[in-house]
Image (cartoon, rainbow, N blue to C red; front, side, top):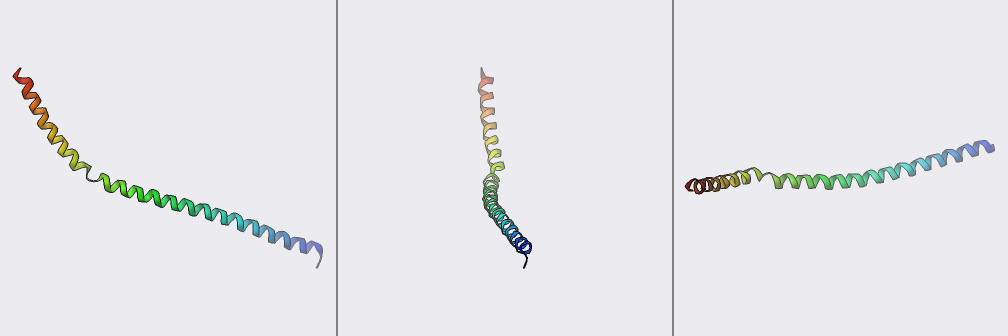
Length: 79
């Protein structure tokens, strides 16, 4: 086998190994990103669950404050 053929085979094998290592490193990085995105997604679901009942709570606070407002207006009206 000529030296050029051996050199070409070795160079092709080296190229394949380098590309494989590069693709494996990309796969590892994408795996870490996937893990982080899952954590963010879980956090968003928790935030969504915890903020759903805010509407009814705010309505209750507004009703209470309306009563306070009416009482203060009554006090100011007496003067």
